Structure formats: structure tokens, C-alpha cells
Length: 309
Picture (tube, rainbow, N blue to C red):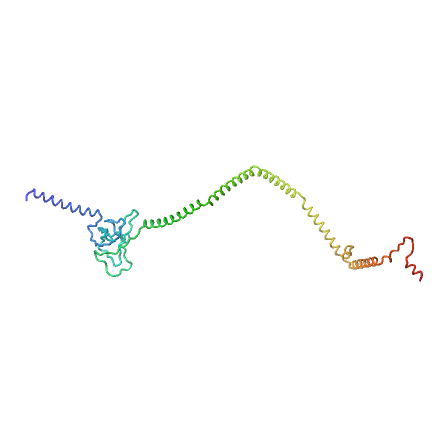
């Protein structure tokens, strides 16, 4: 073997090593762990929501693998077959699902392996087809909520616009606007009157009020300066005299007391009134018995009859 052939062999070995390093380096940069042993599983989806190869695979938020490949067949309802690889030391029990979830706020997607709380039955074998489901993310929930609220808002807005159009087509709105215009004019007149009252009459009222307050102050000062003690003393003296007068009226010793308390005087006065009343009655019945009157000085026939007897 000559030196020329030896150089060619060295160049070939270097080229092979470079190609191998390039292959593994490229796969490593793509996210493949070329130094660990992994197991592969598959799942079928109707849509991917932006899922791509090399997307992470999580279990409870911890990355355990990645998406290896995505195959699609649009002639089927479940068009996408997703192949994933996870660390071989992780066993997937029966009931595990491959959930398609949102990965962050930028719209990316990832695979989340949802393990059952209580494992039942045997473990999935490598290459098994796992059950799948699509879990809506935060953005999807917000969009769904906003769209629902937007739909209800649009319905309310349409109803409001229809009512406004109906009111505009009706004469009641025109009358209402006319009434509002009239009310505005009345308010303007009232405001002008109030302004005139505040500028012309209120100052006079305030001046009169000041005068009244001054008079009240003078009266109050006169009341303070008045000799109330002497007035009260005089009132007390008058009350005492009235009390003495009432005591004399209640007593039977004095003249006033005897007039007010002696029953004999009342009986005598009552008897006298009755006698006077009887006298008046008899006087009315027999006036000639008490009055003798003759125009010619003649005597009463009764006297003549007495003489004959």
C-alpha cells in the first residue's frame, strides 16, 4: 500500500466520522437524546392545533420525551398519527391518555401524558396506540368566553337598535323631544328669575334680616337690663294678697265670708224672691185690690156695698 492510497483511506475515514458527527449533532440540536434509551408510542388526533415534531412531551409538567414524527392521512376523520418517544424507565399503565395541550401563550402545542390515579391492568407495551384527547388551553377558554359574551352582546345591541329605530319611527319621541325643549325653555326662564331674585330681592331681605336681628339684640339687652327681681317680688306680693282675699272668702268671720258661706242669707233671699213673685202674680190677677183710682173722685162700689151693710 503506497502513501497515496493511505491518504485516500484517511480522507474517507475523516469524511465518515464527520458525517456521523453531523448526523448526531443535527439530531441533538433538534432535541433528540441520542445517548438515552427510549420507548415509542402513538396517538391519533383529528387536529393538531400547531403541534410539530420535536414538541415536548410532559408528565405533570416535567419533560420526559418529545414528538418524533407526525403522519397524516386526510382521507380519514382522525387524520394525524403522532409518534412520541419517552424515557424507557417510565411505564405507562392502562388508562393513560395522550393529551394535546397548549404550550405557553404563543400558540404552540405539546403532548401531556395523563396517568391514572390508581393503575389498573397491565402496562402499555412499546409502540402501543394510546387513547387521546384535546384539552383546550387558556387562550381557547378566553376566546370561547369572549365569543359567548360577544354573541349575547350582539343580540342585546340588535334589540336595542331595533327599539331605538321603533322609537325614532314613532311620534312619541318627537313629542318627547318637544317637551324636553319646552322644559329647557322653562328652566331658562326659571334660572333668569332666580338670578333676578338673587341680585335684586335677596340683598333687601338680608338687610331687613340684619335690622330684625339688631332689634332682637336690643330687646334681649333690655330684658337683661330689666329689674326682673323687683317684678317677681311684686308678683309674689300680689299673689299673697290674692291668697289672703281667698282665705277671707273661705272664712265665716268676715263679711265676705258670711255672704258667701251663710246659708240663712240665701234662704231669706230665696223666700223674699218667692214672696215678691207671689205678690206680682196676685197684683196681676187683682189690680183693683191694691190700686184705687177715679176720675171724678167717686168711691169704689165695693166701699158702697160695705156702707149699706
